[in-house]
Amino acid sequence: MERLTLSVTIDRPIGYDHHGTIYPINYGYVAGVIGGDGEAQDVYVLTEDDKPLESFTGELIAVVHRGDDVETKWVVTDFDVSYTADEIMATVRFMEQYFKSTIEMVD
Image (cartoon, rainbow, N blue to C red; front, side, top):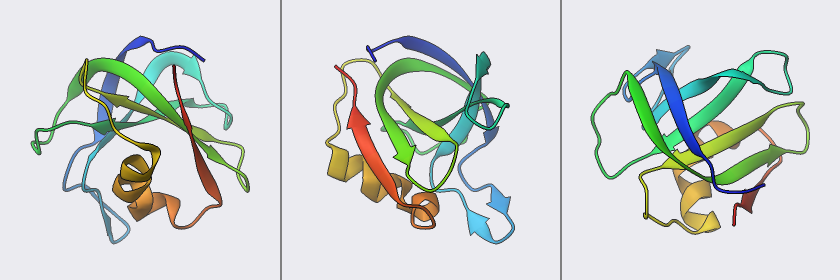
């Protein structure tokens, strides 16, 4: 997979409470791209800013593969910002701790 510019609709902004799980980052989806669950492709949005967002345009830098689930999660961030796989996993662990997840970095 290559680095793509993506527009993300945020449906779970920073601070969102989903059954007791508080989202520490913005989370949303890419409209028109279908994920493994038959719904829009889910996206973790990593930014330097800690404000809740409604939308975000950025660069695809990684894919979170779930070995025990049909879904993958894309990781999108600001242009020209880099994260390591370990930094990404630490940031998305709030949700990925429930799955056997691995990070694939995008070239």
